[in-house]
Amino acid sequence: MDKLKVPDNILCTKSHEYILAENNEVKVGITDFAVDQLGDVVFVELPEVGTSFIKGESFGTIESVKAASEIYMPVGGKVVEINESLTTQPELINDDCFEKGWLIKIAEFDKNELDDAMSYDEYKDFLESKEEEE
Image (cartoon, rainbow, N blue to C red; front, side):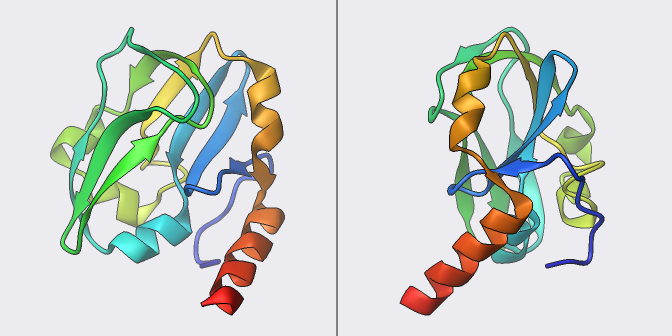
């Protein structure tokens, strides 16, 4: 899972989305663990720019050779940009989920909603504790 360069300021959710704060926006994608679980991504459905969502709401779908999976909002807010490259190159998520494979950018979000997110180290600990339960 440590193949990719993980950004220092990344936050992760229990539903395997990540959040990267950039000025007054956050970039949202799926974690490298989620990518590993999905396998080769073949299709991504993303919302329209301007759409607002609440935290926890599904905002899109990722389909892989193994499964289709909904993606959930790690914070509520308004979609200000989508990664257009994914419409023709969904495999960018597999290649580099943090740099080239991000999904959406959100503005007008509640910074307090970031409090539920984990650092990458905490996320790795969370994954290990889940593995031990199984």
